[in-house]
Every structure is written in C-alpha cells, then in structure tokens.
Image 1 (cartoon, one colour):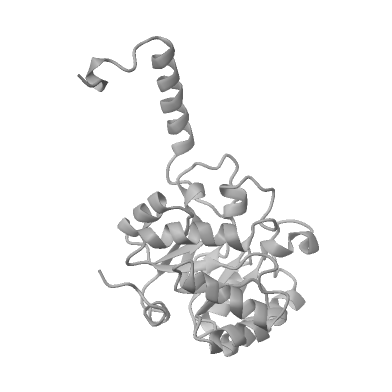
Image 2: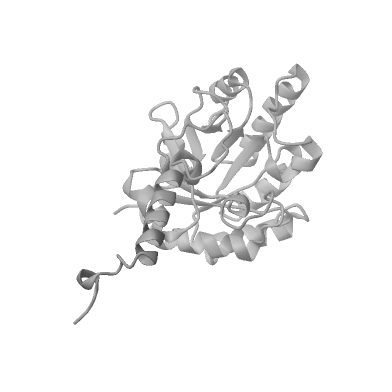
Length: 264
C-alpha cells in the first residue's frame, strides 16, 4: 500500500476534493484509513475531545507525540499531520524546528500544522527549509481563543479579510503545502481558494475550498454539542449509551455472562 505524499495532496487541487479527518488513536485511525480518507490530522483538539481540557492550550508536546505515534502505527496510506501545540513553536525558530522534527522523528508523522499568519511566517520558512512539510491554519485559530474573545467567525470585516488574504499569500511564499481555513465566511474562503496555488481545506469555511476536515468524534455524533459547520452522519453517542445500559442491566440481572460466553 503506497502512502500518499505531500506532492500528491498539492496535485489534487482543482482536480479532486481532499478529505481530512482529525482523530487521535490507533483504532479510529484504522477506520479512517479504511474509509479512503487522504489526510489524518492528529489535532491539538485532542485536548478537548480526549483529555478533557476546556481548550487546546494545555496539551503538551509529549501528549501530542503520544497520540501521533498511535495514529502513525495505524496509517499506512494516509498522510499523517501532527498539530504543533501551543508554545511548541512560538518561542523561536530553533524551538519550532526542533519540535516539528520530533513529530516526524518520534511521532511518525509526515507533516506538521501551525496556526497563525505573519507572526509564524519566519518559523514556517525555517521548518520547511529543514525538509519538514508544513500545513498552515488561518481564520479562527483556537490557540488564540483568549485574544479573539472566544470561538467566532473571522474575516467578516473587509480589513480583516484583506489581512487574511495577505497572510495566506505570505504563508504560501514561505512554503506551506496546504492551508486550513477555519470559521471564515465562504466568500473569503472561495477567494483564497482561487488565488492560492496550494490547496485550501475548510472547516466552517463553506463548500468552495479544495478539501474539508472534521473531527471524527463530531461527525459520528459522539460529541454532545456541535457547532453549525458540523454535519452529524450518525448518533453513536446514543447507541453507545444504549449498549452500556444494556450491559449493566444484564450483569445486574444475572443474564451476562451465560455459559455461551464461558470456558469449560
């Protein structure tokens, strides 16, 4: 089974929609790959989804590497992208290169993702110069949730939209191979998709991006409260609750296990 590469993803622009799913463990990564998805993002959203933090800020490099390793063991065809956590790249180019390299060397990823615009362009360029592919991320950048004043759409104001266009082009010039657009107006996402040479991957950015990403736990209905941009393709939360309640009742009532589930 041949692994998809960064050039493969870039060449998909305007030819075929790119599908990316965020997930964080071996079993679900196997399912994502079996479904034919191109990219697995080991997102810093693991902080909220799997570790119980209120936002993405507390998750550490060690925690991110732990989950990236698990995904990488499962993914033989998908391109695995490790999400660089808060303060793993902001402190300087040397620190950014070192931590990005750890995602490839220790985590088994093939690329990393950084949030931000002008303030990370130099770090993106430095990382790329070391042969480490970088995915950019503009719009709602959850690592700046306190600065932004919460999770909200970014780019409705003309001045902000123009700044995002400028920053996207600077990131492209610095060497990113793709760009996540999170919670931006669809008109702005469409413009960026048309003007950039690299693929755009939307999440809450409308239908005109080159690809789309969702968190696995959101799209299968495990997350109780979902943002507007998520389509729930199943309701696994209710089904899992039903199974667990049935298991409890059968154990309490002496109906499980039976001799059928027992050894002689």
